[in-house]
Each structure stands twice: as structure tokens, then as C-alpha cells.
Image (cartoon, rainbow, N blue to C red):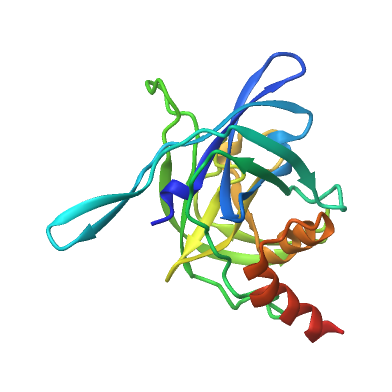
Length: 231
């Protein structure tokens, strides 16, 4: 359902090093990714790789086609520079919108424990000539506020491979729990041995509100009820 809404982000650093990350569409041509994917880099290409297929009776039709960005605006960052979040406005890609789960806070750190998720992204795969969308099933193992940025993260039982950064963590029935940010490592261990951290919708909504690029459905369904609740 949501694979056509997940795109790869090809970048090049100031020193000429090439890298890849992931972004996903949340509506109104706004895509979410991780800050470290795009900060200080030149974005060379953003594209989706999967078509959307709809079955009706015994026939199939295409609802979305893989496409490439024709115009990229941003990146837009959260005002807290420690938050590993970014948004982009992208033209040229026809993609389904991936709605956020309606959970903005979790006072007791356990509301989403053991919830099933599917992580989607573009970690490099040896032998593949082109980026390939990778899907991995996992579950939420823990939730806490990190001491280095006081941001709530969900620890997900999926190996934190490079290229997943900026991708969505999807959860039933058809929502996004949040965005994959950093691998949580100890010392100099490789990222494949770290936990995968997922940041939920609240700081993403803050970022969108700060830059006035929030899709209207998110403002009505999530942001307004939340801000009214805390005032």
C-alpha cells in the first residue's frame, strides 16, 4: 500500500563521497527524512522505485508509478538542531500519503511496547545496480527520552543498516509510527550492531508547523487537538 510513497535520497558530500538515505510522503508533496541524510550534502536524486497495484475482481490496475523528483525545496530542519529530522517539498513524484499514528505522547513509556512495525528503506545491497526498497518486520522493544537531546525514541528490533535512515516505521492498520533516525551505538561498534531508533510524530509536527508546511489533514487531525489539550 505505502511502498510507492517511500523514496531514496541520493546525496554527495562536500568531499565527493556519495551516500543514500530514505524519505517518505506525508501529503501535499511534503516528504520526511532524517537530518543527517541531507545536512551539508548536495541532493543529487530523489526517486521512488515501486508502483502501486490495485486489484478489482480478476484484473489489476496501476494506481501509482515510480517517479523522480523534478523540483526539491528544502531541506527544512527542526529548530532544535539536535533533532535528527528534516522535511523536503518535492514535485514530480506521484505518491500515496502515509498518515501518522494518532499517538503523540506516552507518559508511561509503554503504550506501544511489542507493537508490530514494518521498517522500509534503501540500505545498499551488494550486487544491485539500482536502489532497492527493503522491508523488514520488527517490533517496538522500548520507549524512552534520550539524555543527549531529551527526545522520545522508540527502540525497534531491526538491525540499523545504513540507508534505512529517514525511512518510515509502519504499523497496523495503516499508519506510520515515526521516522528512522540514528543507530544507537556503544563506542566504535559498527552501526549494524546498534539499536534502531524511531522518532514519533510530535517533533515532526513541530518542524512542519515551524516552517508552515504542515498538510492540512495533519493540522486538523493531530496538531490542533494536541495544542488545544496542552493550553
